[in-house]
Every structure is written in structure tokens, then in C-alpha cells.
Amino acid sequence: MRVGSIVVLAIAAGCGEPAPVPTIPVVGRDAAASSTVRFADGATLAIVAIDPEPIDPEADVHLALQGQGEGGQWTVAIWPPRVGGRQVVLGSGVTPEDAKRPDDPRVVATMIEGGATDAVLRLPAPWHPRTAMITAQRIVDGDAVAAIDGPRTHDGLGVLALVRVQTRPPRVAAVHASTAPIVDGAIDEAVWTSASWVELGDSLDGEPQQPRSAVAFAWDDAALYVAADFVDDDVWSSHRDQDDPIWKEEAFELFVLGAADRGRYLELQVSPHGVTFDARFASHRKGDEAWDGTWTAAAAVAGTLDVRTDRDRGWTVELAVPWSEICANTQTECPPRAGATTRVNAFRLDRPRRGPALAWALAPTREPDFHAPENAAILELSP
Image (cartoon, rainbow, N blue to C red; front, side, top):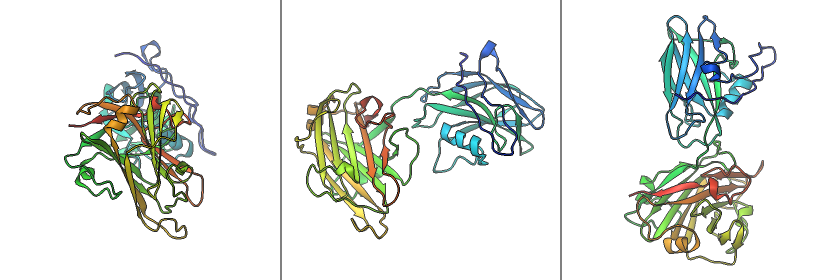
């Protein structure tokens, strides 16, 4: 097992509480952990090595652990860093078990016995953060034992490491459509029931963002089909004409990028009124906004569109983009075939009555630029 190095993390103590050790240890120094976490019953636990490091989000994470203490068990978990950071700073009282809730399913945990042992975990997909925090909870006779020395949270979890994670574009699947969906915005066809719906996250870093926004893909020999489903209590748009700047208000955006080299690509947008904007690009941001494609789109609203004094339920979108148009304007190969891939990204833009504008993404851009093919999702055509 290869010994890895761990990023150092500062931990803030709450007012009136004992201050934790200020840094998470560097793991692997002289083939041993540089420090340990000690629990209230005298037991200790440390990471000796992590393989691979950085963590590969598509592979098992092997942890070599050294524990000492009579009996008991350890719950070892991997957390997204924002959840972990909030827990450390605020002492929220969240445990690895409690954190397995629908709004953040990214915490994974395993139970191990004491002593020198190995643990194997795998990051849930999709995983967007650049780091992951590894924690340990001590369990004796069914009761949690608090960490009292070493890096730890205010509610008693031992913090073993903050580890770098390789950044990889998410992979999404387009289901094969035996019958082409009717592009009316209703997304009630059988193909969308069988499709893999992917929830969108924060457009910059991929963190979960509410309200719910999801997208799905389908394909046949004629076209790529896209559906989007947005929860929205105030659906509106003032634009009514083709190629109006609908991105300034509420809109769904689809980028068909083909490859990750900032070459030719398409940008297609739809508003809640079904108004569309399209442009084709010869290279990064060098576009032709006068171009009008043959793709089709429609939107449907659950509520009263443009009435801003009531509460709506949301809106849905459907698009059909001919492969002939995609292949003529991107590096995607035609004819389409099962197993083929292309790069895409999808965005939702929302302008609520109160608060700042919001943006969701299928794949986080990691920079303030939606035209970022190197960070876009890899779309695979399923059989």
C-alpha cells in the first residue's frame, strides 16, 4: 500500500469549549501516523496510510488504521468537506449515521473492530469536492465515546484526515428511446420514467442546492433528447421573442460541447415561456448568435406564469436536438451508437423574488464561466 500525504486543515474552537488540536496530522511520515486521536475511554486511533492518495473517486479507498483500546468498535466515515467543516466549527451534533439523509447522501461509513486493521470505503457518485474528510466514532456497548484529544469535532468525532480527491467530470447516461418523446414540456412519456435523473448542484462547486433541479437524457438515431424538472415557487420571464437574452432572467441552458478542448460547441436555452436562444461557437466564446438551429423545445409550468404574488410549484422543459445539428457543430461523431460519448453541461438560472440570483449545474464549472468544456459531464449513450 502506498503511503500518502494529507492536506493540513485548521480547526476552530467554539467559545467556552476546550480547543481541539489546531491541525489534522500529516499521514505517512516514517510509515506511521504523526499523531493520534484519543477517546474518553483511553482508546486511540490513527491512520497509517491511505491508498490511493489523492483519492480516486471511481475506486475503493483503502485506509490502514492503527487502533488501541479494549473492545469496542469504530465507525469510520468519509464526509464532503463543507459538511465536515460546518460540523467542526459549529458543533452541530451530526454523526456519520445521522448524516445519511436524503438531502446529503454523500457521507459513507463502515464499522471496524479495534486494533491494527484496514477499512475500505468508496466515495458516492457523483463526487464534486476537491477534498474529503475522514472521521472516526468510537462505539462501546452500543454507546458513543467522545474524542477528547487530537483533531476532533465539538460533538466528539475524531477527525483523522482531510484528503485530496482527484477531480473528474461526472458521467451521465442517456437512455435509448424506443419511441421518441413528444416535445411538449410535459415529461410524462415512458422514456423519462426509465431515464436516470441527475440532480443539479451549485454551478461553481457542485454542492447540493435547493430547490430541487434535475435533468435526464435520452437518444435515438434521430436526436438527443433532454428533459429538466425544476421546483420553483415563482416562475416568470419577461422575454417573448426568439434570441432574446433569456439568460438574464429564468432559463434552462444546454451546452453540447463534443470534446474538452474548447473547440466547436452549441449553446441552447429555453425560458418558462418556451422562448429559445441558440448560438454556435467556433471556439471558446467565439460565437455566432445569429445562427438559428432546427432543434425544438417546449416548457410547461405548474402554476401561474408571471404572476409573482402567488406560489407556483415549478416548471419542466423538453428539448430534441438532431444529431445532424450536433455533429455539424461539435466534435461529436455520427451516426450515434450505443457506448459513444460526448461532453455536455446543463444549467438552471433562477431569479427569485427575494435574495440573489441562483445557478445550478449538471457539472460544476469550478471557474465563473459556463463555457468550460474541460469540466463538463461525459454523456454516454446507453444501449
